Image 1: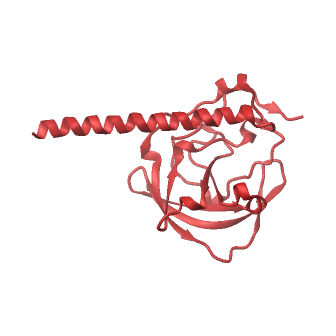
Image 2: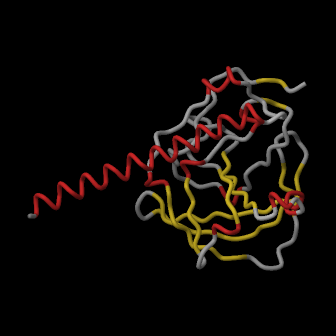
Image 3: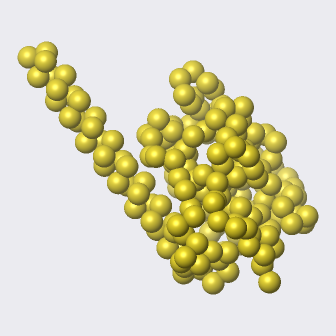
Length: 203
């Protein structure tokens, strides 16, 4: 019976890994198609072959504790074109990644987008990690979340969905610079990797 239980457990875990990999695969395909649909996109269909990702790994999908922040002042988050964009800190999150490594990050809300019904619940998680300038874009990566994703003071953060800002592909975009408080000293080997195409110049 013990051998049978182990075999069934292995089959179950393997099935879960396959299903999860398929889910991330669908997410990434939709991500690629958005470049073609978006009129302001820096990439065209032929450029999509130069997008690269780490293999899907559920170890980088974590449940984080959430502390909603109150009475936060609006601040100017610098952007890579030398300007800035107005944001405010929405929540602090903490979670364990890769064993016992406890990490802390901040979720932000865009002042401009908060006034747009479609994006009023959008939460922005920009971050940098030890893969930057090596395997991933040096300017950091982003994850999009939703206020409704917060349930009972917890939120699921899936780093397999981390993506590059437009500035990774072209100049001429106002990409927010991840604040220092979201710089983590671990290598998050999940999500989008370095773009291998030639960097473009926006007209």
